[in-house]
Image (cartoon, rainbow, N blue to C red):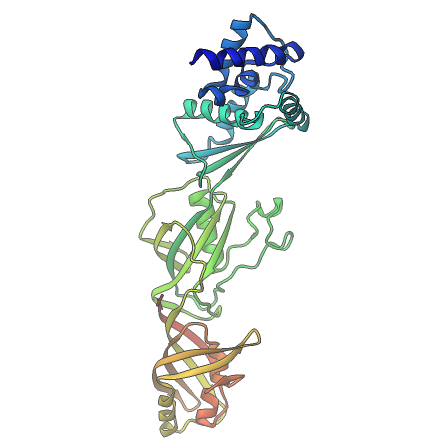
Length: 385
């Protein structure tokens, strides 16, 4: 430590300590950056020793640093059920502490010094890291602590886990989406254990229940790559999906390649860094069971082949949408029903494609026979972007 800067610091410190009692931490941080030192406490101890001045109650922080070990213990307890490698500490101090800190800096025209809040969080992080062997990290930590000194509390928030996977569905009475909790309408409350759902009789429900148990998540938000009716089957390699797990207690788990969940099976589940923000384009191979008002003339079905390599146009949310149809096949089932197989861009309203409600071209118009889609199944769903 250079002697001249230290002499100037001692002179300034003497003036400050003549008016205010300061602890080692608060005194040291006033000048640590100026002297190029990393330890506020050691500098404060040295200044107090050189000036032969002892303090009892710190004017700024009221000896808050004496309680750091207590809050580190609270952090350990709060995070005991969480799997994590990195963490960040935030603190809420009493406004009076921040006001006194600002007043001291203003009165003595102190600049470029570390604030009391920053010093507190740094000490918490330093001692917690030493106790747990975990790493403090500013950007994208696994968990974040909020220490509220006013309420003497410690809250922990876990970074979301993002997943991608596929599922198949072999039951014709399983909806894709789960109804929200009737009490909180999906926000999360005590009656649904803060999950936002209280029943698990859907694709979303079955997957969410698994994620709650496997990862200890509080809530699950699923991004669907296309949708289906409760009566639809999802076959082949399954429908892709993304999931955001909110408040997980576990992360970086080894996941099975195949996860049977009652009436659905999840495949290829893996953790990803984030869910795509842009719309995901996909192509579906679907099989529709269609009934007609009038008996089917076998030769008329051949007209459906004109749908191949055409564009289906329809309105979606008041906007015109266009989707490509890549392949068409058909098979008679009975006098008034047939199967229609399509390879088609995702997002086309298949029932309206058959009935002709604001979709052109459509099956009813081509056959000149009013038609209805009874069921539609997905034999393959492929992401194209």
